[in-house]
Image 1: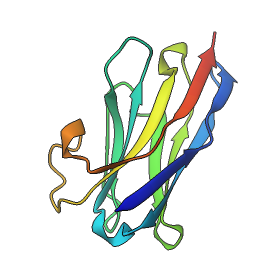
Image 2 (image 1 turned 120 degrees about the horizontal axis):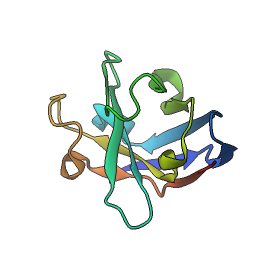
Image 3 (image 1 turned 180 degrees about the horizontal axis):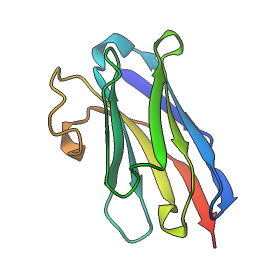
Length: 126
């Protein structure tokens, strides 16, 4: 079992920045891919970004490409999501997730992830 704990959420004005962190503990070697998802009130959870632990290969949703950057620190078992040029529509609860499969395919699909954090709130004011 892998435990994931997100931090770094908060309230920021439009155009501002935040950096989210996701600390992994437990059987961390079993997670090959880490992802960030978000869920706004009244909406379904959606994919934001993903990264492979070993290679650092990344993938982004079109809505955040060029504004958000996912990265990882293998020594700290931590994944980050740097969010710049934030917009009110980025307001959501952000979740960190890990999956054990070796493939980097279908990283946008929620059901392919095995472990989830509790989420951290990000609110962007206009």
